[in-house]
Image 1 (tube, rainbow, N blue to C red):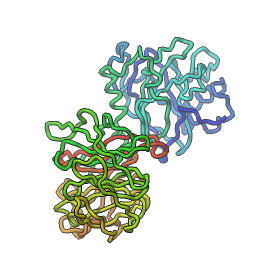
Image 2 (image 1 turned 60 degrees about the vertical axis):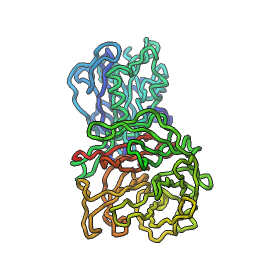
Image 3 (image 1 turned 120 degrees about the vertical axis):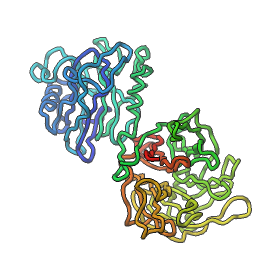
Image 4 (image 1 turned 45 degrees about the vertical axis):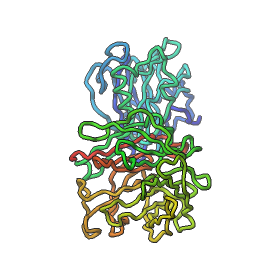
Amino acid sequence: MSFLDPGLFAVGLDGQVSIEFLGDGGSYHGELGLFSLKGMENLQLGSVEFIQESARRILSNSDAGYLAISDPTEGAKFSGNLGEGEKNDGGFLGEKSFALTPGEQFAFLLLPDGKIRELVDSPNQQKSAIFSLSTANSDKSVHFSQLGQGTAKGATFGVEDVLADQGSDWDYNDIIFQIKGATGKTSPIDALINSKKEWRNTELGKQLIDYAQQVSQFISLAAPFNTAYTVTSLGEVPGLPTPYVGLAFKADDPNTLFIGSTPQGENSQIFAIALKRDANNHIIGFTGTATLLADAPGLNGGLIDAGLDFGPENVLFYTTWNDNTVGQIKPGSSSPDKQIDLTSLGFAASSGGLTFVPQGFPGAGRLKITSYDTSNFYDTTVTADGTGTWNIAPASKSVALSGGTDAFVYVSAFMPEFKSDRSANAKGDRILMTEQDADKVAIYSIDENGDPISTTRQDFLTGIDGPIGAAIDPLTGDFFFSTYSFGDFNPHGFNQVVVVKNNLG
């Protein structure tokens, strides 16, 4: 037997898997356990032997399996009505952590109304075991549905606790839990839920869905930045096709965000979305839906990538991958007015991020470009070509970095915790660099030319799946990052906008 079924999970690299009991919409009081599938390949899925061995492993309280949730003795994190009255009772025990073997495959077993030990003591009784592996269920149905996209760090699931031939209502809210530290997918709840039992529009349902989609739960701010900043997610941009790429604030309007998109990996476009601010001017969401601003193709079939920034005269510059070009769009244009091949100018294929050094920073006005493929950081300049667009000079310097470098932003030394050793530059300014391959955002000191000093690298954000775009809110200094997920690239990730908020500003 080969375990390729949806509902199969793989332990992360550190071997630590955590479970959080979020919601309880069922009348039953059962138990949920997780068990390793190692060595079970010769057991028939759903057989008495398979059920009994799964239960034994759960009860072992070892790297072979654990009891994750015992509904008779504990309650969920969120309480309220999911359409059938309040079902949650008992005290919430918090997030539980379990040590498993890194990379090993595992699955879940739910005994809806009883204790899992009963499956070992009396395996032939009528109690119906329900697995995350649909082919192990007697009705061959999917009983574990996925809420939201999930990430490579975890996801949230809703469980239907009654088999089809026993009168299931297919509401998928009987037990709702979140898992971290493991990769796994099942069918999305949209494809499974009984429309007459829809609960996501209730007050509690909205809380649960919002919590399920908060990518910030899987992201960590490194010290000392975690004392001055918090990370949150604005979620998906309404009306913006996926996947997402670079982003930039409109040059003359800090309440409008430009963001690149490559719908289905075929088109290459830039969209605009209005922003919503709170009483302290921090951005808390989007207003309306994204509108198409311009087409942004490459010269040779490439698609818009991480680089998106305004240059001189408010010309919008963008990078394309994998044909290694830069496009330029003049104000009012809906397609590129100029495109430049970077390979002939000494920039290694293919381009990632692009930024003009802001005024007040070392190297102000110079153009910096990263290569995603080689993680090189390049320095160059631009000169007017007489038609309202700009020529790019050959690369004059490169710095070898790491992690799959994409977009980057310059950060003032006056921002909390950002001041660096002044031996690097007179002010101590720094740079934030997205590392798409490493799922991190790094911080570097910069030299007097505005280039990163490779030996000064520190973590800023970790656990951010597929970071690609970067921008700074011109009103608050908050940091914005877009994330990329499409096809085989970061397949468990989100396409979202993540915000790192300055708590002291």
